[in-house]
Length: 343
Image (tube, rainbow, N blue to C red; front, top):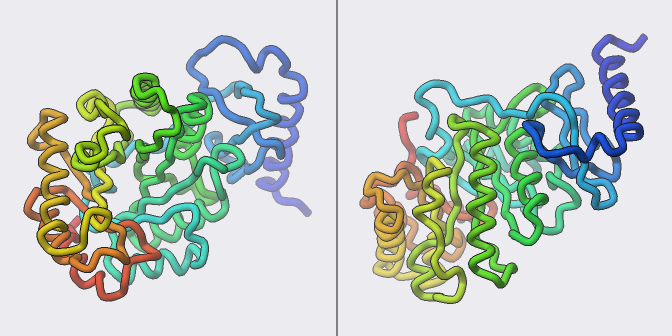
């Protein structure tokens, strides 16, 4: 005989489908407190836990933007004193292309090497909807939490479809696993230059950042994953006038993608590139104490891992790690252990 939870789940799905069929113009009303979402062609793509009100993840339906009524999805705020915990210590990165290992293998590898935070990509440009792989996302988060590892979910906006960029970021922050786990933080990867109009691109990233902060509230940990200042001084056409200082109003931490392996692999370049990117970033923001988590890489092209670690320590960042988990050579983990914190 079906149990009560199963019956409740069926009822929720039925009501969701009925509401979508009948709502009509009511679904496209004026903007209010309820966020806009992209509805999936398979409406109700996931009812992760029918007994909870914040677990319906929504994608797109024939390209139409619709409105869901009901409470605004919110990720749980951090516990007191833990606002920056997901950015402290040793991190590693997993992107949506990293599927040669299972979630269990990924988390086991991270845990075995002392990783304290996993930075997990949850959508990409070709993602059909808001989130790329709900099941894999849920599994990584739950297994990571079981291993005592925090998870920052991140998205990469293209700035060509502001509503889609917003929907994906909100879906990432609002995500809840079947057992009720939530991401510990969110990161916005700000680097795509497909939109040729730089002024409009800058305007849109600032608008997106402000909307996300207003929506999620002041206590949710958010990171700006940014182009490193030294890179933009070398490539002056990538994003002139990158709005570091303006972004600081909305984010708790900056994560510069300081991939020194693109500049050279010797000791001098590795230290200087990573050290100077942090120093220059704090100068541009105007805050010598700006919390920074240093992202280095590319992991399998970075022979001077100990030098990267030394640069991170010399600049007083709150954490650091290499991009990414799958390309980090086994020998590199020994040096990376020095980035661990006691938290």
